[in-house]
Image 1 (cartoon, each protein chain N blue to C red):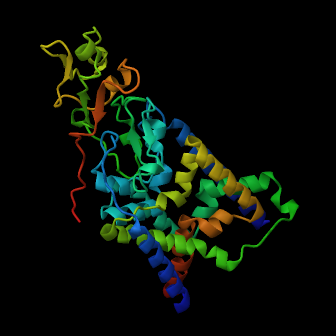
Image 2 (cartoon, chains in turn cyan, red; image 1 turned 180 degrees about the horizontal axis):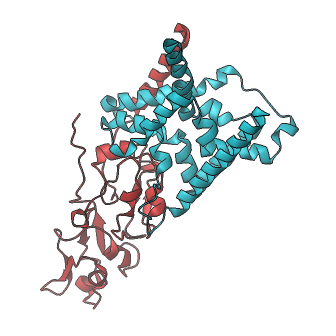
Image 3 (cartoon, each protein chain N blue to C red; image 1 turned 45 degrees about the vertical axis):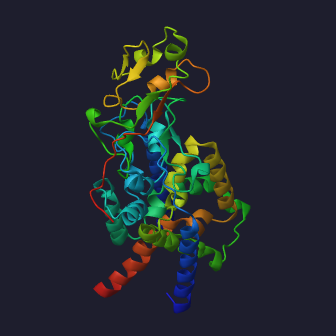
Length: 203
Length: 191
């Protein structure tokens, strides 16, 4: 019973954040409503702040909400991917609408494929940092779920990429999140690994 | 993490960096960036290509840079004045999440400078009574020269591109905006 309630609440939260994302996206037009934080999802993105800070050696005050995200990850665990992320939410809801469970197509993702996101994440971090000396282009934006979601509505090419991601996610459960998403891996590192270590020390 | 895993990650990470370093950095700085943009070297790394500025632009003048111009600039916003001109509304600076486009005052806007091509201009070349650029300029940076043709005051021109967009000459415009003399914001730190 507890699990069902939790699942129900999670879907509610995901729907809320998807609508929030769409609402902010819709409101991002001229004239701008001054009071609405239209770039909320980018500002709470810790990967955006790490990547831009490392590659320019300058922390922008606009990105301070991302520090709050890290703090909440430490307190609550990896809630972000499952309760907040609109990209994960869309994937989950599509699976729910298509009755993915009834189809019984649950192809397990092998562990070595899951490691791709580890390489992507560390590659991006290293890339951002080393860039200062070598002048390497930063491809962080290519893997950021919010950037993809925003660009999906703007450009046709990105819409096709999004459709491909969604289709793959129907075949493999949350393929994007488990295999590619560097933000998901960062959340896992902070919200699970680091949190567990801190909890152990505290105990 | 096991030692073997760590070494694997380190190896692939360094491969990533090595291939990246082979890509030559060509900062040609040819693009007309939105008003309030920070200096080009930092801009391409502060910009996360989220597309918020492109979405909010009321005149639809901001376009993402095509991949053919290079990997560095790919996806960053720029203005193509012939297609659509900037309204100088500064909406893009209000939505930029990373501060690649910063909030500035209207007086500080300077994204480029217009220049008249006298060989193509209807007034200069064919002595026609055109002056469309003069009429469209929002800051009155174009005046009537004593010889009859329109002329730009570079100090007053903000580079919005209204003149280029509305120039009636077919094909290439007789007045072109480049990023020459643009005013960019420095992050006050040096590497």
